[in-house]
Image (tube, rainbow, N blue to C red; front, side, top):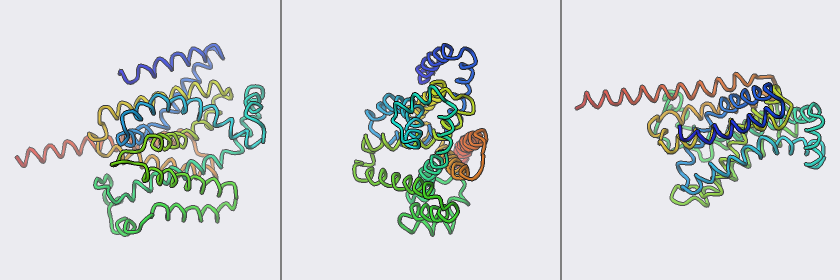
Length: 331
């Protein structure tokens, strides 16, 4: 529980501020937003833990401390304001005042840009999944008939197969939509992901991610996960501070879960947990891409993500028990 003390304290203070903003109704909305954020980002905590395991201790601490402020104030408050600012060609201060004085118009403008946001996040998350799925060095397979077969082994022979498949998907998006803004958003995500990966390859030492590169990668990952929650939050409240408090509290709990997973080496004990997280990322990527064409509930998104994590967790337990039984039988 010690890993979550700070999360509970910050959440309590946030709810206290929410009470002064809008009484018990605001407190309840903040609580719902916190639950929404955690349910949408639980798989994020697992992937974060995997990456943090390969980072130096000092940058692990910096991600948990500095990173939370970027996650809360950067992605849950400033990012939506920046999107509206670009869309309206107004300054940040002017847009911030618009969010305070006319939240309906602010939400309407943000919603007009949501397809570009979704396709950017979907493209970035798709690259993460493809890189994991076609990793030549991966020797643990969860759904073996799907992950290790003639087709996947054939694709793994090609260099940059993940990028190739992502580009093929991009060509389909060009054919399907023909919208230049969507096309630019998608390929921007692909380019950004590969730039971060290339920087990582150059600056990593002995498999340890360079601090700033790993830090930026994790923040981009958090951003991709947060897009859905930030836009979906307006269904519950149009007050930007209520949204920031609710989603920020959820983000704090996600960071606490990440720290717990790292400190307890959870991914080493539950070997399929990482697989479940990446399948959840794949599901989220597909949903975000589909959201440019249809309405999909955040409940479905959160349920799918949690379902993959839970299933991989249970499979890990059964695998450990079966392995112990085999060892006893051998002895």
